[in-house]
Amino acid sequence: METKNNKPRIIISGGGTGGHIFPAVSIANAIKELRPDAEILFVGAEGRMEMQRVPDAGYKIIGLPVAGFDRKHLWKNFAVLVKLARSQWKARSIIKQFRPQVAVGVGGYASGPTLKTAGMMGVPTLIQEQNSYAGVTNKLLAKKACKICVAYEGMEKFFPAEKIIMTGNPVRQNLLGHAVAHEEAVSYFSLNPSKKTILILGGSLGARTINRTLTAGLDVIRQNPDIQFIWQTGKIYIDQVRDAITAATGEAVHHPHINAIPNLYVTDFIKDMAKAYAAADLVISRAGAGSISEFCLLHKPVILVPSPNVAEDHQTKNALALVDKDAAIYVKDAEAEEKLLPAALDTVKDSDKLKELSNNIARLALPDSATVIAKEVLKLIK
Ligand SMILES: CC(=O)N[C@H]1[C@@H](OP(=O)(O)OP(=O)(O)OC[C@H]2O[C@@H](n3ccc(=O)[nH]c3=O)[C@H](O)[C@@H]2O)O[C@H](CO)[C@@H](O)[C@@H]1O
Image (cartoon, rainbow, N blue to C red; front, side):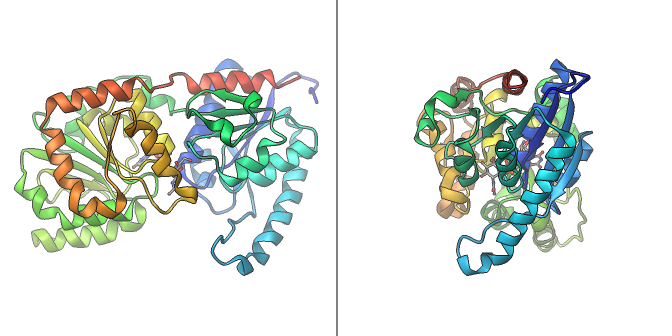
């Protein structure tokens, strides 16, 4: 399907959470760097996060009326099937009009109908699996895919071995490009650069258990004024956290940035993650695959609290791939309220442990992932 003017025409599809969207944007940026004339069109799911984040990153996106399956109540899925059929029709007309030479799927609702339709219409496809355990959509798409880019060993359990390429997960270029000074970064969060800082992340959506643990631990935070905390709550939890801080301090506080306790900075979402990482001596986090790739590339000591609420418990598998190599500390979700804060305080005070974790996690980093994937995408253009 070479076009008259020879510009590469590429569809990138998927989304739902930051974990799918940020790799997609990084791949697009890397393609643009290699081929500035490339025309890239994103296909997402109507109403989901990508419909805002992708245009923010400077790319055009079209939404499909797709919805996720209710795995617990199968009888509720009639409407979902209708939406899926409508999405395939829409994907077909998008492909007919845009005439892509290759389609890339990054996982999430929209990538299923888009890549399936692309494959049926003879467009070569590449999928990128971020996790150590393959999602259902990617397993189905693998049969027709030409290449499958992965970030963990042992993925032949899910995919045909001859199609697998070990590329790692793309990380946003602005996190790696320039080093932010520690002092400047800590000051940005209105904290003290001479104190140790713990960064608490709940993934792109926030994590209920981590938030509950920190809310219950506000007194512990106040009793440890030499340690400071940057806490990302996620959008849906920020009001509860604000109320808890108001109750604990007796002061009415407001978000987006809450600084009512001097050694604690709270926000719902951190836009400038480069600063957050530069400020952090230790990170507490969910075990989303994108976050883990960032910790590896930035050599961050981390305590992982995998979410038990994700498909096939894949976050626990992501986490154990590091824990088995002494590259991260593991706290189970069910034990977080009891163990997380004591483990974090002990670790952040132990410089040798921080160094050891940093050295071990650095060994797992796979750099230049976006560029490696972008080259594979361009190779598929006939
Ligand atoms: C609940 C859920 O379904 N989680 C999945 C989702 O995670 P989730 O969407 O949380 O994604 P990841 O952990 O992979 O990545 C989160 C991304 O958000 C960024 N970030 C985070 C917080 C913040 O305040 N600001 C910010 O920019 C991080 O820097 C990172 O780039 O996709 C991942 C990749 O498929 C999966 O492994 C996770 O299991």
